[in-house]
Length: 295
Image (cartoon, rainbow, N blue to C red; front, side, top):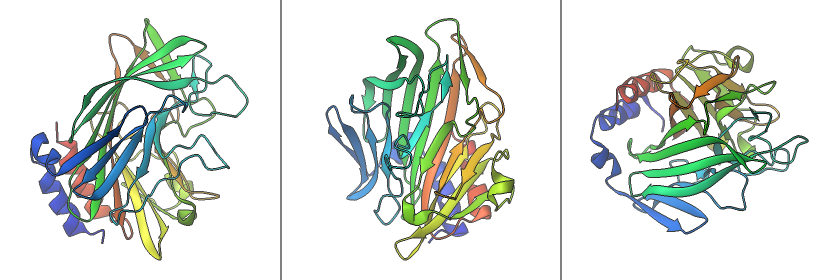
């Protein structure tokens, strides 16, 4: 169960070292396809980077009971890829969509700098029409917050290969780190750090975190995305929707683009936490406070 006590205990775990956070995790690398993470025999997440796919992403992210809590490539929006980071307008190219009209780019794996039990570090290139538009260094870390949670820290550092690049949402404010939920979770509930519980209020509202919970195997489950205090524009706006399907994203370009200089890379850091039951504001506030102080 998702509980305040559980998250307070999770906060204590976050105070430990990185080595402690890695304890108990293992990874299984299927070369050229994916890296899967486990805590003992319990599945945590799978990172997919196959060259045949137009972007790299996490799917599944698992719920604490071992079932997937993300959806990959549904027919209604085939470009929704589990838990993913993407933008729809970079130098006129769409790195979010895949089959919709327009000029598309690809987010391509180049190499892993580190593949270990507690950390995955990857170099990527955002490429369109044979030209690199953005360079990215991505770090993913599984975190042990106790038996009731599955947690994944996501850090992306983005910079242009030249002097400057503009990351813009254009007319699509959902750009950023987003998650598509399984169909049974459609019509779920929203809760953010401001206490907002409706889509109308929470959509575009700056928040330290935002959670989505819905029906899940006869009970309820959800995921919260936490925005790190060190991120630009923190607390960042979140995009949220629950009809006709469930989707949330930390969307820092909801209202204005980022102009990124080579000498000043854009660094974005988030924590995605899956849980069973409804979201609890006090517990998530406590977790955000602990995680926000973590180096």
